[in-house]
Image (cartoon, rainbow, N blue to C red):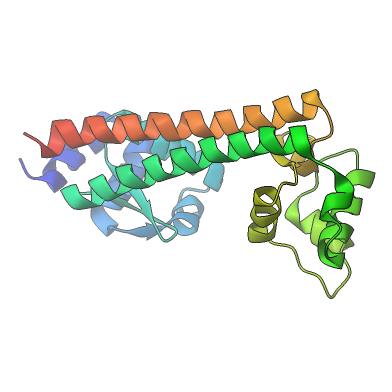
Length: 212
């Protein structure tokens, strides 16, 4: 049985489920933009990602590439995706280690080196809640623009900036105490668990479908 026939049968097995509909669409149309796929089935992108996660856990190699989903039929593509998960795992572990180190050694005066950094720091200090990237830039002077790379650069230079996706506390925040540090590290751990699960499931797919 070829791959298309196999996935067609999988669609029949899951015909009453979004998984079957999405699998059928990807099997028929090939690589599809994530936003377009979510719009096609009138669901949120976040919900679509959970559905794809479920497909991967069920042994279906649905991978992402440049904002699109596709069914992987190439062993090298799958190995590349596993390697990317390993790389992300290492980055998250490093980020967690850096945040803890920054929290233990942070002194505000040490980082008043540029008006851009000073402005962002003062903003985070004055706010008692997390700020999304939009919130930050809406409150920054026009001559400054902050993006994710700026935040990463500041963390790498020793500023303890955490992030959270909790309801009513979503975005970036300055880690001021142990409770803040716990929230920031728990957020990293949550992402890390997702990466580890995805890596493990992809390795199982590699073993079962490509190493026979």
